[in-house]
Image (cartoon, rainbow, N blue to C red; front, side):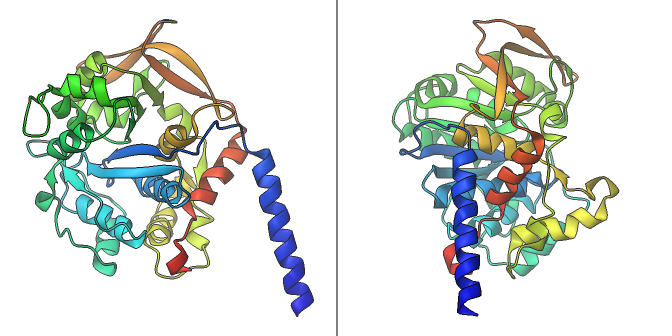
Length: 336
């Protein structure tokens, strides 16, 4: 038996070495990327995979999570975020939501109410969460210049409100000035390229239009066409761990949709991947300017001097799916 255990251990170590050698060059990751994560976490469950991916990056030292914000006012969203943060041993991460009007959309598979009923959390409803703009302004004001990466994988509601915000007790700067000073880049799962009509953009289309026309810095888009071909989650739902909200979400949701029988489309996970690892080796990019109309449709204009980029798949899709699944399957040391 001991000989077999040694053999399996050597086999596992060999696989890790091979995986490390085959990874794309990702630059210097000695300094963790400071990240604010903005999600609608409700209408779809790839957000859950993206948040699990992000916690894996924080546990590995590649990312520092500054806040986890909801752009969705549905009452189960903030509690669901809190469940996942708590399971990954970060119960004190700030969780915010829109203070005023905003989209209110839940999950058809009822995974949110399932994990909220089953796992510890402090926030009982989204209406209890702090104003997302207040959290944005407080955190950004306290960070070094050009140090924060914002990931948005939901509606542009919070970022629109941030852009329109004025001076407060945290900073004398306007929202636009604060973003220009503190934010290094925005990674956005939004749009369909080079043109189309995508969910995150059209649900709050006026906010999307204002944000993308007025954002003062670089924006990297991962569009609908990218994530739709990257199918993940089958390995997640079969993880050899009990009591995982991430596993439960995929275990509940995948069997409920015929289109997910080979795995769920991975739109939001690609945004976390780009924020932490960059695009080299994973994607090619095209530079220009997104154009959003009031109906929520988007177009694109190529421009070598443009502040926007959208990504084009480079890594073979099966390899990227495996790369994402590996990170979504991360389990904190105390839960193993």
